[in-house]
Image 1 (cartoon, rainbow, N blue to C red):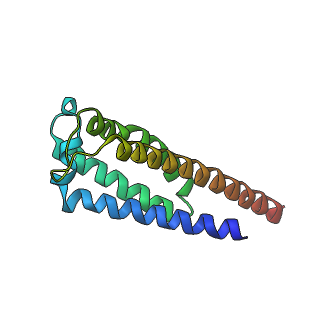
Image 2: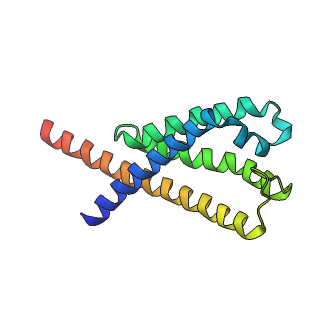
Length: 142
């Protein structure tokens, strides 16, 4: 029960964080633009697109019916957007005039991996719960 409660709290916090960061993509677009890889072109567009995706993932994590799909999408999204973080690291791109050292970038990478593992855990837990609910429905209807 305690682990179920802690997972629900972690999922809610993670979903809320996704929504908050996604909204930041609209309210402070210029902050995110420098790390968009130049090959993609039009950084504003990509910042807005990723903001929409983050808000949708966050909302999906908060809703039990869409949680498993949102968790899978989160894994794929986190893998895709790490390109921007790697771009910032390799090209020493400053944010708000600050260029971060290797230690900060390693911590950022570890945080990204932690979020990927959390997403996988949420997916597995959501899938198990969904399967149990289906089995219960099947039992009750027979």
